[in-house]
Length: 115
Image (cartoon, rainbow, N blue to C red; front, side, top):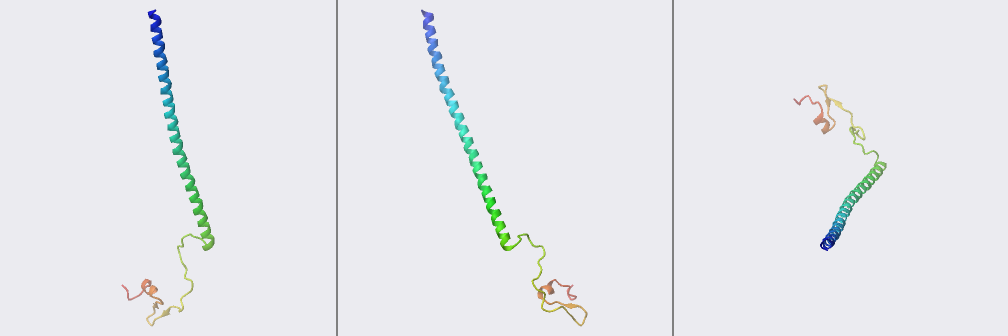
């Protein structure tokens, strides 16, 4: 009879351990699904940010094209040509050098009195 009682106690302990094992398994599955949900949320957030950046890029490209159509090329101009020529032609002085026709030309020009 003693063996039957020990067997019954062992079955009870086994049942308790199985219930505990199931509870632990459910906890692990719950933690894993929570982790998966967190990872999924992170991925969705990154995808959303990427889509927003793509939309902003497309909008900027549309604006760039519209401005280009309206005002011409947006490329930087390396050489700006004057819209009209100077009103007077350069004059020669009695000493044989050209007189400046504008202040800018005077400052940038090759003045013989500047050393």
